[in-house]
Length: 369
Ligand code: M6R
Image 1 (spheres, rainbow, N blue to C red):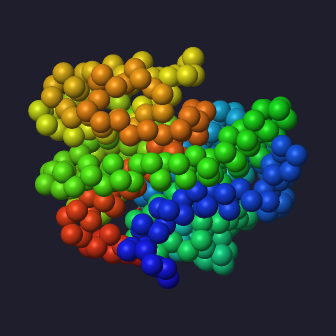
Image 2 (cartoon, rainbow, N blue to C red; image 1 turned 180 degrees about the vertical axis):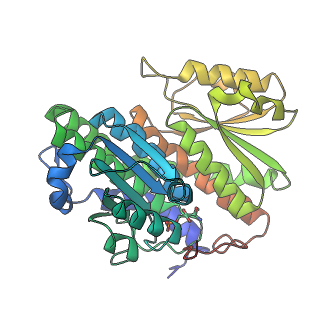
């Protein structure tokens, strides 16, 4: 039930902090990850030499973030593939491949068929899913449930942050199992995860009204671009998907480094571009590179809305608007940066008088191929 909220989507965005907290709950002890639901894969997880994440839509963007974390922590190569592409291209699979499906509903036919295909071709399968007892977990060797609670709005929001959280827990579990991170490092990453719900609360609280204003003056906009690098790139893709499905606006997400390979030709005076700016604090940060990308598009007339860390003053002279998020270590920034984009998609749809819970032509779970 909506419980007094104007839409399920607004309610579900407000539940993003809780979705992360509940997905973490009971899954660590004394600074170590504890996932008994993966016990049946214990031997397999020591032997795999590859992970393939399969998913569709928003769940695939969560998968892309999972790739960064699993590769960084567990040093296992990870491919992320759309389920419907994976299934029909004769992929290379064997008993040392772990296929991780990500699905909120657990009923997405494309993903279900891909899981069955992977199992038939000798891979081991793990489902990351938000719906207890649904079909994909039943067809998989093991399941790691996200605990976002029921998601009703067609556009996925709280399930996304819960999926990223579960993938990060999997990354830490693999790192523990394979000895690629020591105990102190695992504990430090867990602390970062555990700090997220409070930071997410801050973002929902602080960003909502300014974004509603921005969405209002943009209600006639025909096209919006989103740029990010590294973990900011999947966030850019997610921001663009939300705008397409909710506000029926042409939107594209790009890896910022790709600009000069083509997309910069799209920039003309007045083009709105959201840029996900990494924290400047980390010495290896891509912050300077993203700021120079902003300068490139600004010089061509783009109107830049930056999503940047509180205290990042370097970005101010180059952006028309800065939406602030609290500091988090680089791998955790996307969980915070995505929230303003979820809010923006919803607010722009509302400003256009559209139904945010039930966008046209879409179903909550896509149970046909
Ligand atoms: O239920 P699933 O997570 O398998 O659904 C996958 C996609 O259909 C879903 O994420 C879709 O892209 C959303 N409408 C995005 O907001």
